[in-house]
Length: 24
Image (cartoon, rainbow, N blue to C red):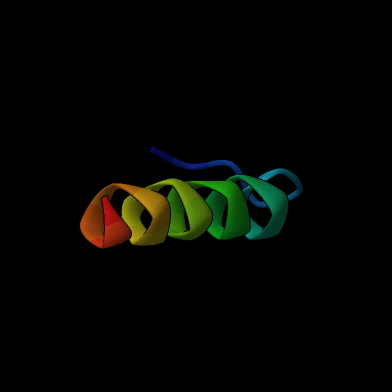
């Protein structure tokens, strides 16, 4: 998984999804 340009945005989206799943 080497996405230097998209990694920041994708990382934030992944974290948000994980947080939402954790809250639910």
